[in-house]
Amino acid sequence: MKKLFFTLALFASVMASAQNTQEAAAAAAAALSEADDVPVKVETPKYWTSTLLTNINFGQTYLSQWAAGGYNNVSLAGNIDFTNKFEKDKLLGVNRLQLDYGFLYSADKPILQKNKDRIYFESKWGYETPVKHLKYSASFDFKTQFGNNYDYKTPATVTDAEGNVIEPTTAEWKTARVLKAGLFSPAYINLGVGVLWTPAPWFSLNIAPLSGGAVIVGIPELRYTYGMELKENNSDDARKAAYAAGDYDLFKAVRMEFGAQIKADASWVINDSFSYSTQFTAFYNYLTPKTEPRITWDNKVFWKLRKFFALTVGTNLIYDPMVTLTRKDGTSGKGVQFKEFLEFGFTYTISKNH
Image 1 (cartoon, rainbow, N blue to C red):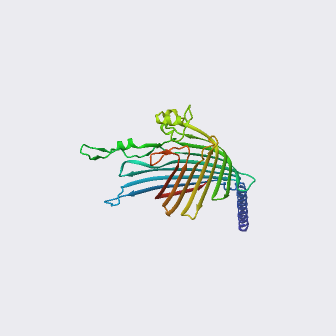
Image 2 (cartoon, helix red, strand yellow; image 1 turned 180 degrees about the vertical axis):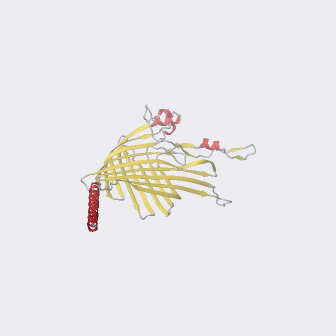
Image 3 (cartoon, rainbow, N blue to C red; image 1 turned 90 degrees about the vertical axis):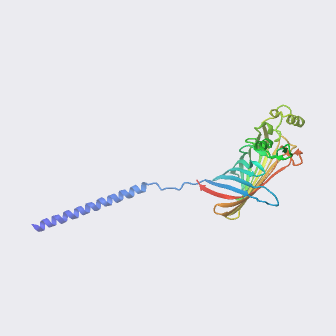
């Protein structure tokens, strides 16, 4: 009898173990089946590359009993350079925004002077043609400044009853300054279609034989300086007479342009710390065939000395035959505008693919 009970118990144990094994196998099979249904994670293609370069530069000069002369001064300037690049199949696009703003205070002029002010946005898009390195292109660019910019003239000398020179007040310095530019005064807008040639990663040439744009001068007293036409009479003598009489409202605020534009960009990255970039632009207006093209040429050398500190050297050249410049000898006419700057300060770069 005991053997019978023992045999039955052993049989039940074996059957239970078999059932558990069967259930475990079924669960494993179900798990494998569910695993097959889980979608494989595919990495999303990233077509955009964004880079943000920021600079804050500070300068200071202090003189004490300096025989050669000079004035104590302090300067502060900031720069933002944002580039957004898109590349997918046959389509290529580059958007770039550059912002510059800076101030200078010098002991010889008790007034805060602006020494940098620029807003520049450009966008270029190209689609591949059957010709290697050649793309159909569309481009847009916009340029202006944040606010009013002045030429800081020295106020007239005033003496007291004893013949001593009275130092000009801050209000007199502000009265003597001459307004040169302002927000949308001027502003340059251009939209063109043509071809984009990119023979190398560091060089591009955009030729837009069909370019339309506008020059906007919102401040009436600046419209003569930037070559704006009269609302009714377009003769040059009439323009000069209206300007001399102070009839600024007689000038148009917008001048439409239609012509051809050539823009060449080059950028060399020598290493992680040193780079050079240049851009040359020429615009020829079909509506004024006897006028020379408007030319701009910008250069920048960037040298990263430490992780967060860099030296920047740059130049800006402009030749605009429609702009009237006042020369040092008091005469006026067209000419070349040139600006050079050297800055040292804090820098930070952010780069992201998305």
